[in-house]
Length: 261
Image (cartoon, rainbow, N blue to C red; front, side):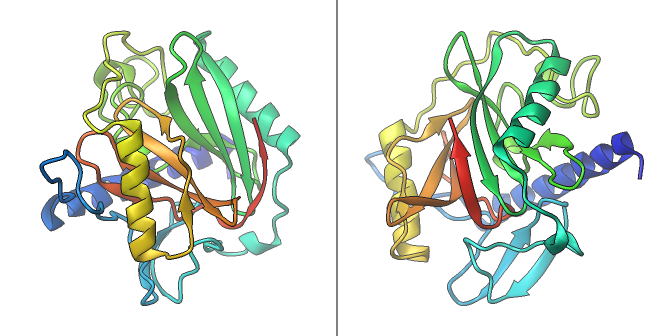
């Protein structure tokens, strides 16, 4: 399959899935905020319940209902089990090439996490230190594309709904990835970093006892992303909305292998 066409299909699949997920979230309610500004726990928009039935969104953009879902192991699609995971150097080269194509000198690669399903990258702004976007790298093609979920739907500056600066705006649009965004977007959120960490931990305590949320959430424009830890070691990620406190569990990564910062 043509590489450009494959990236296009992946991005479209991610947008459709993200839209469906968040539309559903509007009907099932929002997190239970109390008088202190945040509630006892935030709902998951991508539930992977301990009862064994949950929704999974893989790195290839497939949607499925499944039984016995393993939060840390994830699922691979089709014959992806035969694909060798990326190395840090392979992921870094692909991501740097992608960033160079955006022609935005304010963006820099801050972190890479290698999973058996894909490689994850956190991109920040040099001028502010704030997270700009989250990217995935496909291990079979080395294609780089925007991560699903919060990165598309909650990102107020570089995401799907961010107007001229986002994935759907301006000359580059969805197929050209991210473009230079407006400097007017505020990074201020009503949910603080400490509150986001507390919400994430309370969610894990209820849904996945024994797992810990990182105490240093990575801020983006409109949300935070946190590592999920087991005995001090990374196992996955989740995001917390910076205004509603909703929790979104990242279910497409698979098993954690290594990290670069």
